[in-house]
Image 1 (cartoon, rainbow, N blue to C red):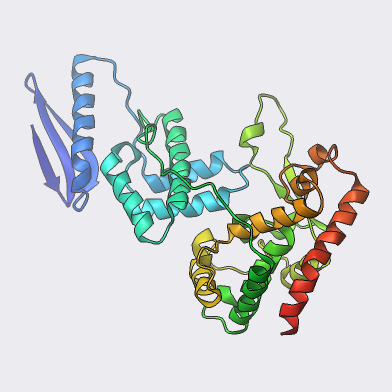
Image 2: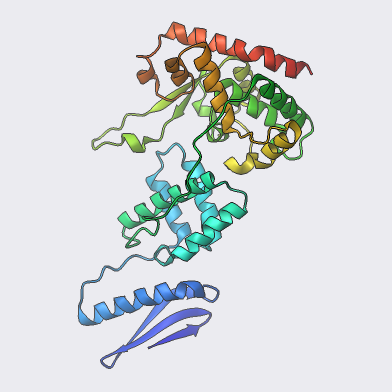
Length: 355
């Protein structure tokens, strides 16, 4: 039995009952950390083949190759762009290994790298949740035997959120206007419009980043919901969407950027972490040390529920598709709500614009 290097690649030699077996490990110099797992797998396969024992030969595939398979399987998923961006990061961090050679030690290092690169514990959880789905699919397709994240312990997240005060909204928008007028990056050139759209609609950060022009209708946004929850056996799948209504200032922002291209905002890197340095700048210049982008959604939800009702807030924030929300509120009520919501912000936004 022996490990042999030829032309920079690893091979395995094993002799059983006078018969010699050679097997390429599919590894090269620099991937020594993967040798132990791969050697064990190859040796088990050789022994099973020699003695005619049952052995499931898992198909070798690299992480980057299975990303393509994942994309094909999840083409219907609304958050696919974000998933692919995160999987590409994971692939680079792991060094594009074979799926069946990924170890717990590598995943622990990945977690540490995410935190070191400025991701929060909650964001790290999102990366590992996607990765767990990724491994489950690989298991179903016969590429791995077990999901290495099946018993992974995720970070405990603080679910508490708060709404911004009126004074805080005002100063955040003032600083945001200053940032867009004096940007330090390409993204900051559109920052004020970007954050204004969030205040006017209550949209999530990822929804704005991945907002496509094709989703924008007259007076509202028809955003596709991930169909995973709704997939049923049958010939057809009902398309699920959620409706996000647009007050006049939001329509003006969309009109400013709308084009024939794929996405509304011209962002080079469609990654939720693109707001990191801008958020840090806002915290420094406003003194609001706990400010997060998601806090805007909490604020909008609070203002709507204070002035209307919880069902109206559910609709305005796009928590359900149009058919579901028809039972909660009539079309006339929707129009009135859009107009009143616009008035709630108008007096604050105009003060910032005039300055």
